[in-house]
Length: 386
Image (cartoon, rainbow, N blue to C red; front, side, top):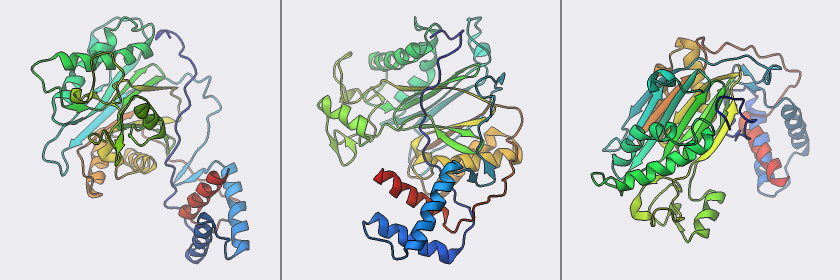
């Protein structure tokens, strides 16, 4: 697909981790509702059918509203999403801390003006930007190598900029092979890789590993990458098909991710299919006025924080000071406060010069007597039975 033309419609995105932690409710009724819901989840009839019916009705009404009553925000679709003339302005900030680990093995990159950085007159849409988070393991060599070379492999690929997706896909594999060929580096070290390449309004996320990209869309968290854990169904099937095994959540009993660059002690000859893959999964979407910021984080953040929690914290911070650097620092601090066991690296990218606006909550005509926790539990029960 030509980077100089309109990109194809965005892929489906993963919209998980939606929480409503601060919605007020009556405590006694909450307790009663939760007991009722837990009985249902365990296959037992609820003690109070009237409560269950009320909860079911509340769920239906809230689903119709698309769970819009989040903390201080309203989720709504802009009628001009498809025809908008919106053009993002890129501002980014980053923060990285070693946390409880002895060594810091993460790397990251932030380029707000890709044209200026490349010194290029390439024929692709402007503005353009590039960001990445690389979570190293077994040493720093792999993460440093990928951080320093991945953008070059993308823009020098023969598919760039005619077909950006193929260029990115190829670049990850080339980086893996080039790393293996560097005799001065420890090729048994490895790294996950998460990149965000933006041309105009088109955002392309490429991910290999368990870093995660989350979009803040008017306060709602939209996950636009998938964590490649060995126990993930699709990854497990791929691994087992290629002769790999999973022990206690670890690929071949050694690695907690299913995709990574490097780790050549776990891979076969170049070009051969192996359980540990360096190939990224790509997600693409067109940015709109409702897309306020992007969070790229390593698993040290997501191990202790949901996607929705991170977006809620980031939005509050940006409303206060409109500084993505301070915002990323706050997310890292919060992860450390929650006793993450890993290095923590966070990149926050804003798409506007202005802070996120305060959005008033319209008065609801539905009086709910079920807590956010109970509502989410009920939704899970209904989903599992559908």
